[in-house]
Length: 331
Ligand code: TYM
Image 1 (cartoon, rainbow, N blue to C red):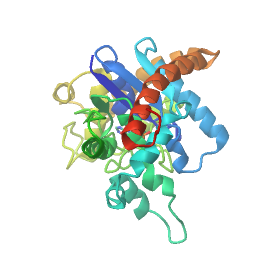
Image 2 (image 1 turned 30 degrees about the horizontal axis):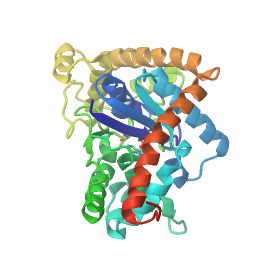
Image 3 (image 1 turned 180 degrees about the vertical axis):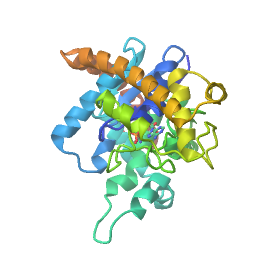
């Protein structure tokens, strides 16, 4: 079986973008691939997290992975901070990347460009891709399924793996990012030219998976479209309706042309009402399972087992890396 690995940060509440771009694909891959999925809680420290919120968001994310259908019998599920080797490998790999490479990362550039005059940007945000490189390369995955915004970080991981292999001999597999053809970039419902994001300040354009379902349906009904009332997929000229068609297509498993045909004689009102129902049904299934999972100690059991499996792989890999680099003096 080929191996896949991916993670999500427990920063803020999980969004429909995370669900469509990452969690749902993970679930669909678990029978075909050996999956390793984790909660990237070290990554969330690049911006201040209220401890009680971080604890809740971390637990919710694990519960959501499980509620969405990830099966711990098939998938290794763990918390990044439970496997200390990530931070250590992150340091070594951070010493192999240049400032130029890190400053070319779009996510960093975006953050840096929004920084106010008297604000400063944390060093963690700058060096964040090194830790991500470690998360990935530690486990020799063949594929890394991510949304569009993380593709560049995965490509850097490939470059660093190659650099390490050239310098110290073959050690890491070169991973390939996999971005969903449809749904790799779900857009904000109020401003469909920007990505739906956990850090959306008003929250109006963002659907949070665990929010009240009626609130989410209302957000679909008030999503920004245009005035020509035609349900056609055209990202450039009709970004709002194209984004809604994408969401509809993924959740209903109907293709976009199929949906265009189904709604060729309808207006936006009917389309949005149906989509709100589809979103509501998907969320309802997740909420029901989430309620069962969040109680009791099931999550702890899953995380303990997942960490044991991950540690076994990580220890071996780190030992190999340290031998090759000359860090270890024992034979
Ligand atoms: P994060 O937590 O920002 O996002 C988690 C995943 O969700 C995807 N995503 C989206 N997909 C479609 N539309 C959107 N609007 C949308 N918003 C987010 C992201 O692309 C991602 O796949 N650095 C990573 C976490 C990470 C990681 C890793 C991922 C740490 N180590 C190793 C893969 C491998 C991050 O911040 O994702």
